[in-house]
Length: 451
Image 1 (spheres, rainbow, N blue to C red):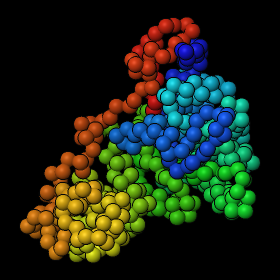
Image 2: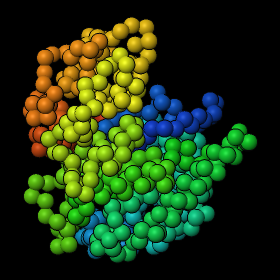
Image 3: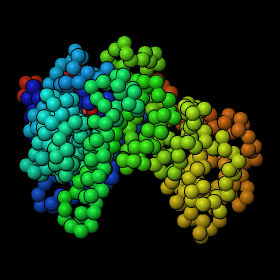
Image 4: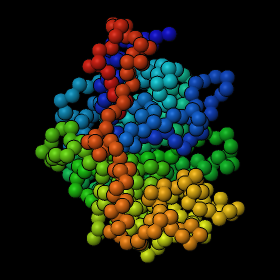
C-alpha cells in the first residue's frame, strides 16, 4: 500500500518539518504507556522506542514538526518570527493525525514531537495542539509517544488537558537569563515562561499522589518536562548557563535541559557573527557537564567558577575536573566507594555499578575492568588495582593532560571534521514507498529534513 498525500499537504510537511529543526528539546525516554491489546496502534515501552541521535545529541526518532510557522512574536533569533520573509503555512489537527499514523505504520517514526509558532494568540495555538493530541489518542487510538509544547501565556486549563494526553511536555526557556530574553525577545518574559513550567511540575506531583490512591487515574505528563536554551546568541558564559540548568533541575524537577548551538538564520544586527559556524563543541561540553549533574552527583561549583567560567575545549569536563584535583587520585578500584568511582574518568555509572557488584566475589584486575566496560585509556592514570597502576606513570597534571589530549574521542569526529549531516526521512529507499497524487517521484529539492 502506498502512502497517499496530496501535494498541498506535502508542501506543508516540507515547510513545517524544516521550521522545527532548531527546536532540540525532544527525547522519547522515560515513559511506559501501554494501550489496549485489542485496539489501537503504537506503544512507548522501551523496546518500541528506537533512539537515534545525530552527532550533537539531537533525537531523530520522532516526527518533528510545527503546527504552524506563523507567529505573532518577533524574537530576533527565530527563523519564524513575524518579520521573517519565509513561506508560511499551518497544519490542521486532522492533517497531523494522518501524517503521524501513516508514517508510524511504515516504521519511519516512533512518535510525534509537536511544537508551534504562536498563531493569533497563545490560547488559540494551545487549543489546536490539544485538539491534535486528543484526536490522535481517542479517534485514531494512537498509544505511541507524544511530546508537545506548552505555550507560555496559554490558559492553564488547556495546558492541563493536554498534559493528560501527552507523554512529555516542554516549555522553552529560550535564553539563559532574563536580561538576554529582554534583549532579543522583548515580547516574552521569564515570568510567563516559568509559570506553565511550575504548573506542570505541581500537577505531576499531585498526579503521583492521586495514582497511589486511584491506580486507574489518568497519568499527567508521565515522562516529565524538559526545556531548551539557545547557546551563543548572547554573552553568558558556561558557568552562568550551567548554574541556570542546575537551578531548573533543583527547583522544577526537569527531566532534561537541552542546549541548542546558536545558528544565525536571520542575519539580524542584534545577533553575534559566528565565523566558525554554530558553537557545536561548546554545546557538546555543556551536554557532557549536564550528564555529570544528573547522573554523577557533581555540582556546577565543582566544574566551573566565576574565575574559571568556561569549559576546557580540549578535554571533557570530567577529565578536566580530575586533572585539577589530582589529590583525590589514584583510586583503588577494589575499595573505593560507588560515589568515588563515579568521579574517575573512563568509569561510567553503569561500569561503577558493575565494579561494586563484581568485587564482592573477586579482587578485580585491569583485564576485569576492560570486560566490565571501563575506558582504560582514560582511567589508567587515576586508578590502581590491588595497589598497582596499569603502567608506570607519573601523577602529574601536564603529563596526564598531554596523554589525554591524544585521545581523539575527546572531541567528536563529526565536530573535528567541521560539521554534521542531518538525516532525511526520504532517502532513495524510502522514496519507493511514498507516492504523491500529482507526481510519481519526489524531486530531491522537495525532500525534507528530519531536523
